[in-house]
Length: 396
Image 1 (cartoon, rainbow, N blue to C red):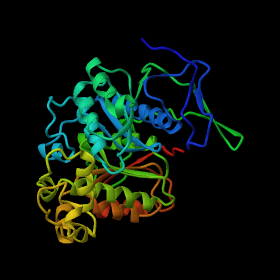
Image 2: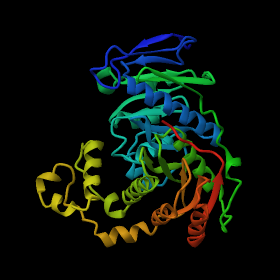
Image 3: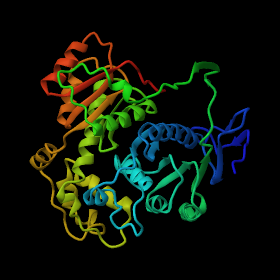
Image 4: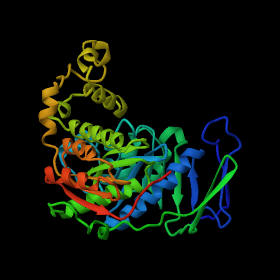
């Protein structure tokens, strides 16, 4: 049963001083709030995230999940199984129920950038099941949007935040109007909503010498492109094994996007280094504290931090091995066959140079730069496969 309501009062707008605040739709809102009290940014994340996972699931035929923060995805993924090492890196190795495809999708989305995903808004393409809810029960999260919830999963989620966890049900059959509007400084903007379809046909124009485009690379490029469609521009996304592994959002220079996303992709892979996976955590330590220790362990000043016993003794049972620069460099050479997408053209080959450092093999990006030839030549230098797409994906 879906209750159609036309207006919903919010806690406040973007900031607590921005009151009153509400959302409304003359034809009825496509959401029901089942628990909690949403704020303005909560619903921006929820509605953008729902569009992403709905489209991603339709494009791949798999359950999809997104972890949103401040109107951009920290991670997005489809429900493909993963190794025991990734299960450990994602803190789901001791789950007391079998993983489901949806649970795999959310664990991947959350695990892409665990620092950014702290306090995320979760978007799921399918009915929330018990394994997914159990993963969420251990994470710090602000809310969730999904088309439905199993009764036991609902009970698990209702227990979060002392019963205040925000739970939203979305009408999966809702189709928004073709024209969308927004008001800024008293000025109303109007445009046809971005209903472009992202599918395999976008990848037909391969302009590099390498024509290799594996089935997994196609899937990963679709993940990256659909993620970018709902990411604040400028943006670049690295993807591997059915998930985003690095999202660079909202940067004024595209090279900054590529660097930022590449650094996140490197961090994602470094978290799978044996020295990290072998950490022995003190019994009862929360995921938040585990994550903070791992994040600090990967920083350049890790040695100074861990010289103070007070910084780590309550979280891990023994002082960790500090990865050297050489350790990190050697490990990152194993990161390969990564896919990368950009929401607009690359103006220079320097973006490709940076992408190569993080194992990128497949690229999808719009064309139109006066230096497209330089971008193609740089891809050819590294034997990358480059597909030029005739679609820009700016999102603001």
